[in-house]
Amino acid sequence: MRSMLAFAVALLLGVAAHAAVPLQASKVSVSEAGQLERDAQIELARQIVMHGSPQGAHSCATCHGEEGQGKTKAAFPHLAGLPAPYLIRQLRHFNQMARDNPSMQAIAHNLSESQIVALAAYFSRLVPPPVMGATVQPPALGEQLALHGSGAVPACVTCHGPGGRGLGGALSAAFPPIAGQPAVYLERQLVAWRNDKRPAGPDGLMGAVGKHLTVEQIRAVSLYFAAQPTLSNVPTAVVRP
Ligand code: HEC
Ligand code: HEC
Image 1 (cartoon, rainbow, N blue to C red):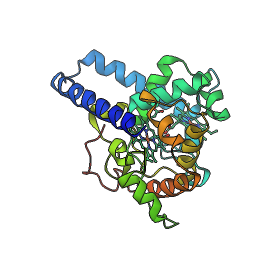
Image 2: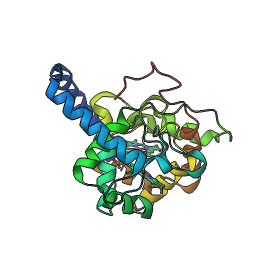
Image 3: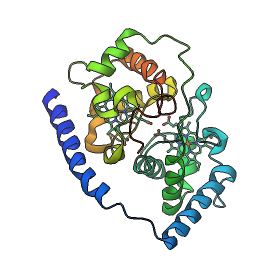
Image 4: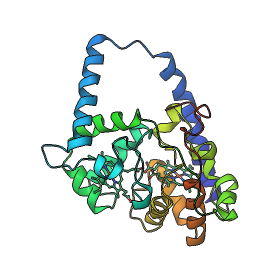
């Protein structure tokens, strides 16, 4: 198992590193028409975020905040600054009832594919909320697992970047930042993977990680990443996705 996961990491990191080169080289200035289309897409998303959709999806701001900053006390994750391809994947999973959460399934069920793409673009451009400091001191076990891994599980930062702030660039399509998300939210995700309630994600990596963690490790590592600063606290630490 250890070697399988290690192999998958090497493969993914290798492939993505190659993909990053042509992606950057092909950056061209956006045409005026493209810009107008983009503005329209962002405006469509903003309407849904603030007021919900005519098809019945609730306003995202109610739970995720007007700036996509989330609500820590209610364990609503922040969406601001998460990579667009990651957000699209999650909204599709909710839409197809593959990721378990009754509120989000009902909401995503009422979103069209173009609305999903527009909302992902919208939230990915916002700045993640700063982390105000831990209210609970994370157990040392959390840091140990995050930085060094344990048994079959590689260090979380291998895939989630320094401090869990993401790897940036092309790699961010697969590997989201996890720093500063509510501890209860993070814990629920890891438990969901343990219980096959959330799709295992690219190459089944998180399904494998979740199944190798104990309840104690899950709690400790969730408290650790919830207390880690985001890109708002450390703006120059990582290239923005
Ligand atoms: C009633 C509250 C509520 C509303 C309204 C809501 N969400 Fe959510 N959302 C949640 C909760 C709770 C979760 C965490 C689900 C879980 O634990 O898996 C979540 C998770 C998500 C995720 C996954 C985040 C991640 O890091 O994987 C995305 C993406 C998302 N919501 C997008 C949206 C969008 C877009 C809208 C508006 C169209 C919206 N949500 C409206 C409650 C809400
Ligand atoms: C081999 C690479 C890899 C390692 C190691 C890894 N992850 Fe992940 N992680 C991923 C991928 C890929 C995703 C995206 C899954 C998806 O798209 O649903 C992810 C997603 C997550 C999410 C969901 C974020 C959200 O917003 O819902 C959490 C939480 C998470 N990982 C925690 C951890 C923790 C904690 C560790 C260490 C114990 C860890 N990961 C180690 C690859 C990895």
